[in-house]
Length: 181
Image 1 (cartoon, one colour):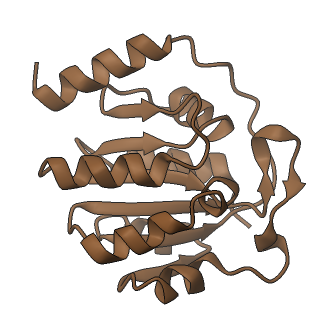
Image 2: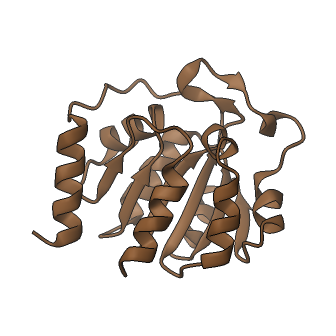
């Protein structure tokens, strides 16, 4: 099974000027360690809101928005899938890194470790483009599409440092990037 950090590294290597909203905790730390860019917004709080923040951004401007979210965070805000389905912006891709646990708080199992299927929930909410992938090739082939992609990844966190930017610095540089300044 592929790891979350290798998945994040592959995504970062493939993307160019897309805006990336990254889930709190280790996913943000792993993205920051693998490829920091002004186009990356690292969530340092607000668990469960990456999908909603990314959707609002996609609706407000024409650039492609890619959201890296975790299964635990998405489970906290399942209603965002209905909103994503009903707006369905072509410039929005939600990538759910499903490691079947709350990776940033001690790897306690989430509901996806049992019967819950986030791809089925997204489809049931009305999202038309939903796919589940478990290989790098399938991941790469879906990165330039829209909709929801659930990526099955192994449990575990990479040994990466804490992000050394303040929340204000992250916000300011991301806003300057969006404004083109």
